[in-house]
Image 1: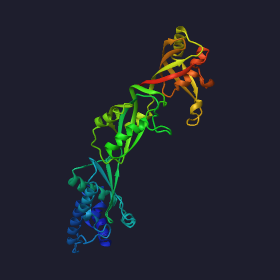
Image 2: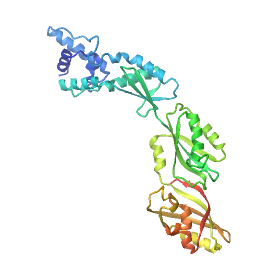
Image 3: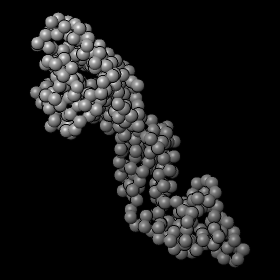
Image 4: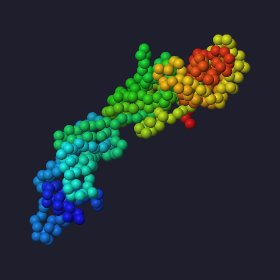
Length: 386
């Protein structure tokens, strides 16, 4: 059956060994060129026994126009195109003219072929082998760079895949936002991304696992974050040096920087963390040590129904969120102040937990005390990993 199909193909079309072998790519082992040579050799032996002339490989293939002969040249072009890039792994893709792709489909249909392989798949594989040999780089399905080759025009397009780095940041001062805002000269994101962009020579995108207000510090072990560096020209970067540059700002510190996969980066950003806070509470009508202790005792283990706070209503969907306070401890400061140390679900607005936000948060410290309470100062002490 193989020789019969091959003979029909070669009698009607001028095919090189690559294109002949590709008709039967899913049969046996070896390259398509080796397969085509073997089939042509066996067919010509059989034709000789029947007194027929052999069908030799044509000077120019009627299907691929000898495109596989260009592979060494194209591999060198790829090496030149990537000369100033740092990468270890790659993937090859290609764009073939429509007439070749459609011509191959028509050939398969004409011969009833069900064992074939598309021309671009073989070409990508063979070009990848050639590039790997001359560059010393490794082909991968999760590559640093992707080469898109137009074999006839000899154009080479390089797609540089992003780099993802995980870390935790501490915001040591009040008065800077997490991400850029009008009226502020810098942000946590700009301080971090400035160092990353310079080191990787790419565009840095900062993504934090939650956020804190402008006037809130982020202390303790820091808030998890991921930076995505798009189209990095450098990948062999010492993350320790980036950390030193960021930490020298005196405003933001980063800890535990390390490379992660896109999947790991997504998991960091979608995981819901519990948070530990320290709030300085002002009670203008006065507060006693006993009242402070009583509020903390009532808050511990309590479910909080919190409608989207009035101050963020334009940026967040207006709905009621149910969050839990897991632990609350109070420390009396003076007749008008006490500290409230809280461990809560992520996403609970602490300032509104204290004030009640005109009834939008229930219960609240204001409600439990029976008199107005305000969050005068707030720090995030820790983002707790579960």
